Amino acid sequence: MAVKGKIEAKVDIKSSAQEFHDVVKSKPHHLPNMSPDKMHGFTLHSGDLSSTGSIIEWHYTHDGVKKFTKQIIEVDDGKYKMVFKVIEGNFSEYPNFHITYDAIPKPDGGTIVHWIFEYEKPDENTPDLTSLLEFACDLTKEVDAHIQAEAAAK
Image 1 (cartoon, rainbow, N blue to C red):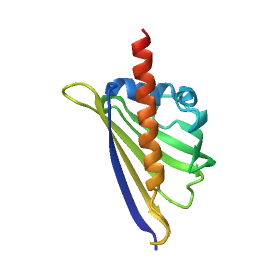
Image 2 (image 1 turned 120 degrees about the vertical axis):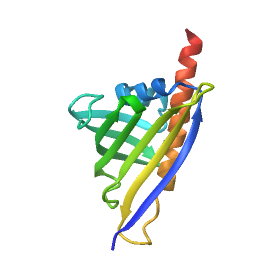
Image 3 (image 1 turned 90 degrees about the horizontal axis):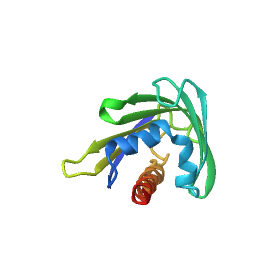
């Protein structure tokens, strides 16, 4: 019997919600330059970079292993939010796996990036995706550092 799982984390960054959202939504092919140890490639299979229903594929290293995942995306520009529905790749043992981020502007500047992973596990013995959530949080910090470095160089 499938077991539902949900884990989440929040990352405080200096970049604006729009800056972070624009990188992930419109410039995902730049992520390998921002985080070369983690991200290796990005492919757009159908649609365009910033439209709901588009199919994308990521190539990355997680827990020391090169992996890939293909996803259908949902985009909400008004809320600086994206949902990635995993349809192929290294996490196929987790049916109905959805990765969501909300980039929430802070009143005093900066952003809280709220990551939510929702999935089904085949059974209780299947591990939660904690290390993948940590990967997303670390990548968020690296994207923020890159945005901040580019702003400082101007």
